[in-house]
Length: 226
Figure 1 (cartoon, rainbow, N blue to C red):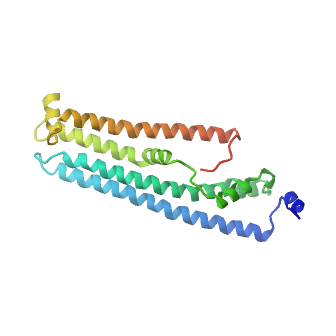
Figure 2: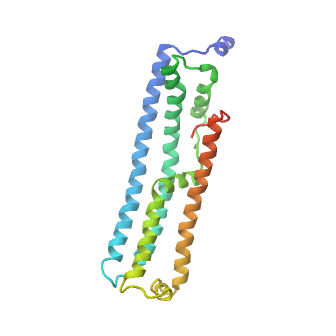
Figure 3: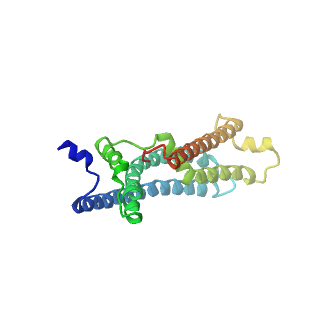
């Protein structure tokens, strides 16, 4: 019995139908989680818009909302990265079926079961796990959306200091305008630069990791999903 199962490398019509329904389910789940990603991005954009409206409401309005909104943007980024890890599970499974089930079936009329792609998928169902780490998920979301949000926030803060209440005349004057309570403007500006540089570095690092993974898959040296 086990020898017959070892030699068997084909799927019956009923089994192919079951796999097709499985693919539909994975696409549906990935679509649902993709919508949740859009939701957190929208929250980040809306809160940044509110901060911009408050800070630029009048020349004498404080730029503090543009600083505080950074905390909310980070919160939304963390939530979105967590959601992305779930989304990536369903997306990777659907993509795996597309490349190893549907593509060979359409191209060659053969499922290439001898390549054991089905065992990789079966292991992922038996022992489900995330396919990317939290840092990689954060980097991917920064590259897709949040880098632009962070840059707009930073440019808006710099613009507020430069034009309100009057056009800035010197760097020291701009730093004085950046004061937040007992914190001097120098600390606020340096923190802001480190804030953008840190997230940009994570985005670049995750891009390098993704490039390395793509190269390994192209060489046929990796069979992992994600």
